[in-house]
Image 1 (cartoon, helix red, strand yellow):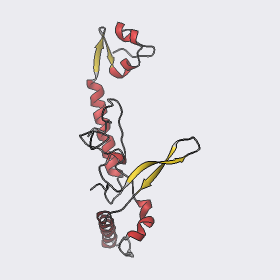
Image 2 (cartoon, one colour):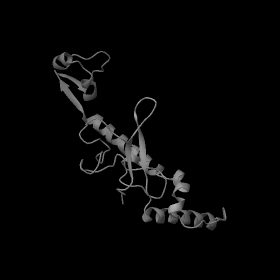
Image 3 (cartoon, one colour):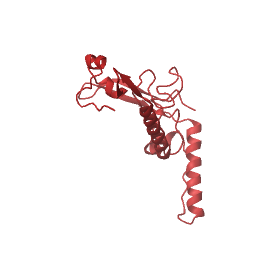
Image 4 (tube, one colour):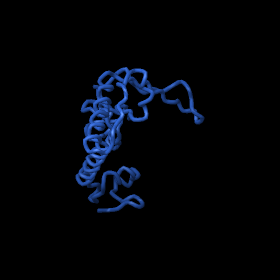
Length: 174
């Protein structure tokens, strides 16, 4: 469940280039803590079952230890995925709502984070996005003035070239 109390915002403080610095207000919920504890318990149990290691179990994760576990967490949800632009930044294909050729692939698109590292899910997301982009590329052929071109190449043409169908410098003609 996303925690609306956690957020990333721009600070009034500026970096050396004059850009606003980022402020992260990250708050763990009881569900976050339980998920972290359960994951650590499962890993410890398996290490002991396989006789790989005897695991010393720490006390439960409480409010005072949030700082200690910060290095094991990944901030997620800053470009949240949702079918509706009212509830998210990117659609289910990771395309930024309202911008046809801008995609975001990373943990920031996850609606919420779990208690585990997101590496495998990120790889799956990247492969899925790559498949979508290849499919879109294959379907995105248009005809301009009788000359087939890729729509991405068409965008780089000067208006006169787009109207005449003449290829832009360096443009591949299919």
